[in-house]
Image (cartoon, rainbow, N blue to C red; front, side, top):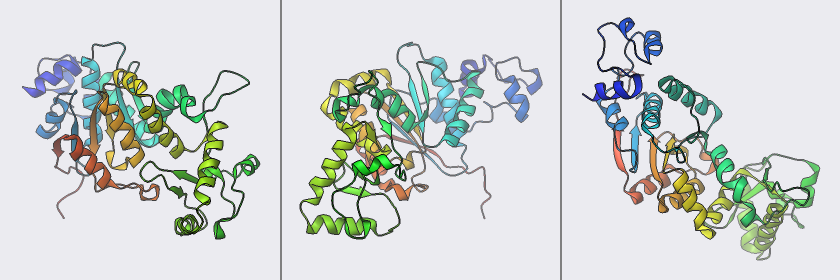
Length: 335
């Protein structure tokens, strides 16, 4: 019964033909390539998530090799096909360009076309910059472009060594770290303590913490340096996330508008969510956005960004997300 319903929504068929070649549905070319009916091939666990109510908070706990990306592709296509509001949409987010390309390919193969307005598919960063940071961040960064009306923040890489950055460095040295430039550290809402990016000194954070502990004037200097950096229209990626969180807190009407624009956000590879990103999503959730997290909390690969999957686990528990599972590994044998 479940297979038949999915067939009607995604393929336009009312039953599974005995021969794939006899199918006249919209997915026939896809099915011919793989040699079987794509919908019939889905497992009960996979279908359970695909048919689950979209406007609810869900954590899809997917083990390695469970067909997670394919399932997200089917789910996204299924919901988009059934979507009936031309002014609100689904945001389908991941973290790397390669993951975005793969996910885009899966979704479009079931849709029959690319993801279009009012929906969004892309990286977390591109969504954040396009819908929140560039339109609204001037309200909290204080940056106003005097030459034209474009107040978009210019993102500076942490390893950038351009000469203009000498105008944004500390007045005094920080022991072995020397003069610290504004793009070489960030501030986190978790503790409001500056965190230095990994550079030539692996123990750079220890050195910085010691400097802050022994000299009370250093913290105001670093915070002031960051604020001057932002007011001049510059920021790192972590700065953008920090400022956006502050923006939504200070201007809750923006969070309300965003929650109305994206009533559902699906996050693939949720184990790679940083604390700042979780805080952003929490703000939107407080204003009505529903969240689907898809991933495996044992597979995080961004420890260098201080990502701790236990924070995502606590977030899932705090929101009371309904947990569904993809527990069958199709990629590996038992040994």
